[in-house]
Length: 306
Image (cartoon, rainbow, N blue to C red; front, side, top):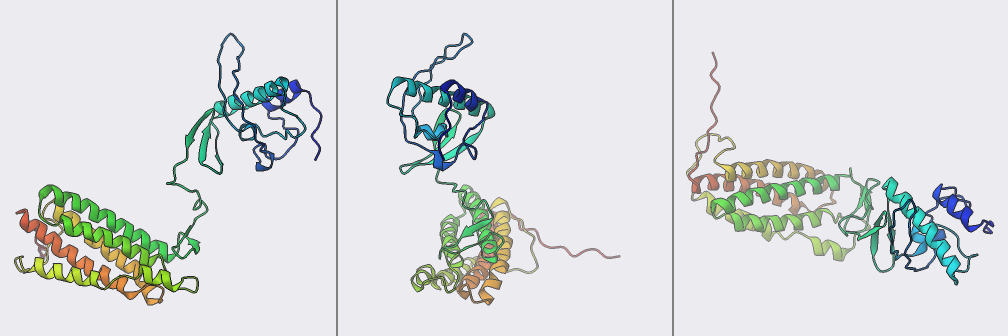
């Protein structure tokens, strides 16, 4: 499509009023052109504001400039004036837009730039996410439900670990190990046994049965040091113990979330075994924390019936 003939002043006016003579999206990628310039621009109304602009022209000014040869001072001044008008407009409306180059991602807000963080990708804004095998599924899928429960469990264990660290009850190292193994657990769940998953990835993320054996060993060692239970106990016994009880019930929920996947054959049954044993360990660890910190465990009391 040929570029219409407009005077420089007319184009500046149209740029400021957003009357785009070429139609469509003024920020379309098809209109981007490479032009670097550095120029100081004096603003009117008695306010002298010199702006030094370093940018690709098409990232700020979406104009088709192939018909304008920017090899003379007048053309450069024209481009700068249009660019400045758009910078002023976008600063006023506080519009933010992201542009990607081959070297880096830059977030442009008004006339300032900042490097885009790799924390967010925007790829999941439409409600889907990727698994380790490359498959995209809805975030409401059972796999992501199970992963979310395990993530919450890890956070609960982390809080309990901090309390154990402060009280110096000796459980911190074991809880750190468990938090790391929960990451391995998540990798196994995020690699479902389907036609799209390679054998190498299944083997790489397979959960080692030795992890469950380790939990059983810890349970035996800790339980041997505790007074025997004679009745039900309530979640109690101090901050460490209470938060370990909280982690225990979240662990049970995580187990319930993963069981349908295990029963469907898409997740290794070792994942379910580990979560089942982990809830047992957290119960014994909660009692151990109360015992080592000399805190009382509150016993269940039967209701008084008339």
